[in-house]
Amino acid sequence: MHCNCGNTKLLIAAAGAVAASAFILLKFCRKKKLTFNDDSNVVYLVQLPRGKRVPSISPFPLKLETYLRVAKIPYENVFSSQFSTKGKTPWIHHRGTDLGDSQFCIEYLNKQFNVDINAHLTKEQRGVARAFLKMVEENLYWVLACARWVFGSPSRAGFPSSMNSLVLYFIQRKVKQYAYAQGMARHSAKEVFHIGKLDYQALSDFLGDKKFLFGDKPCETDCGVFGMLAQVVFNQPDSPHYEVIKKEFPNLERFCWSMREAYWPDWDQVLEKA
Amino acid sequence: MGILLSSKKPTFDDTSNTVFLVQIPRGRKVPSVSPFPLKLETYLRMAKIPHESVISNALSPKGKTPWIHHRGRDIADSQFCIEYLNKEFGVNIDEHLTTEQQAISRAILKMVEENFYWVLVCYRWVYSDPQNAGFAQKLPSWLLYLISKRVKGYANGQGMGRHTPDEVFHIGKLDLQALSDYLGDKKFFFGDKPCVTDCSVFGMLAQLVLNQTEAPLYALIQSEFPNLERFCLTMRDTYWPDWNDVLKPVAAAT
Image (cartoon, rainbow over all chains, first blue to last red; front, side):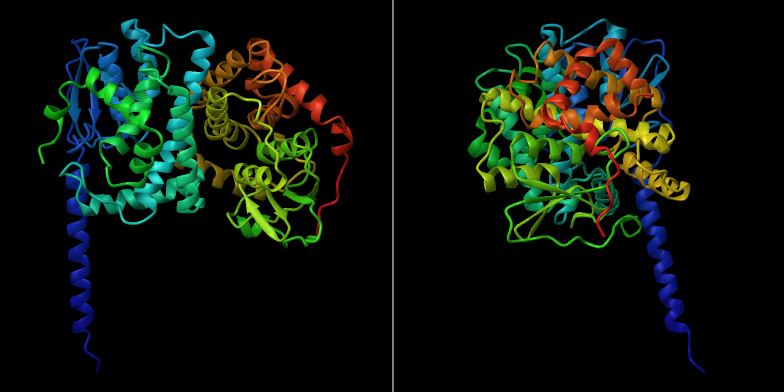
């Protein structure tokens, strides 16, 4: 009679691996109930833990937190992997209201705190500002997502310690699926790099010698562009993207440093210690 | 889905310098119910590149449509097609733009194709009856159902599908506002001569202004951004004088 011992051991080992995976995943995704003080006017910014080289390894929390600093809105960080009702991060909590999507958050906060960091733009400039914001967040974002998650194995360098290899594996699976849905992942790695380079060219040509995109005062789009480019300039120094920026679009690196020095004087202090 | 939609790959004359533009069947009210074939065909007309439309559901190597075939080569993605054709035919309909204008032009192109496109997609396939998309023939309900399901998945992956219909409308409105504010009184986005971005914006907005006029976004254009409707009509009248002839039923390639 054929002995099933080998199969049984295999099954036990597989079950053990699944249980261990689930435990590690849950540890990262555990939805510890977040509590907020709703009497306070403070904005709670819920985001993933700090990176080792950038305050956030995701462009949108960095954009949103930079905006809060530019607009001088009182806020407090809540480092958590809890997602918004839209299933994404970052999100904010303010006076009992939860709000997802960085741009919706900014619109809400502009109203609540009566601020408008776009106020110095003309109507035409506002149109251009929105176009660049969307180019960066809906096109360049996917270039970088593909470069990091779709082509080759993602590196954990610079990531928060809590994001272990298993978490990265699941993120990679999701991002591959999303990037295919959005369309960028249908292109080859070379084509995606080319698309990214055209975006850098447009940003660089528009920025020119200016300190920020529209002159001496930053606007929402500067926060969005900074959040995105910081991922390359400060977090991925070995990537071909940083190489092309350094070589061909140095004003973009200069811009990132201007934003960092003006709005993140505590940059080194906030990072996760290596 | 690709298997359901795609048909046998057409055959082409590779000795000719003609560009074969492979696209889905004509719409009832617009030459294409998809923005990208309309963008590409408008560009071909603007750049005066000899071309021939091949009406077919055959998909590109990237699993999408439209695509082109030229001298033995298949090229997918409307923007890659334009870059290829610019080189092959020594044309550049963007050459009158300054460096800064070229930058703005790309930003607008991407806003329209990577953001507003998804607003339209959600409206057409998720919030309203896809039979209103303007297909020349009534498509079977089961096919529309399958496409809607697929599109919903894509929109969720891209992100737009995670918002509510009101939020998506609001996002669309902000894009239209940006387009309208930048266009102003100008004939085209950068003055009296159009460029690639004009082709793309036309391809996209024509889906509302000249096709799905029942859409709330069209009502918005009419009431708040009438210069966008004026722009679409200008593009149509200039580059599609044969608009009505084109819309007469065309037999699909086999």
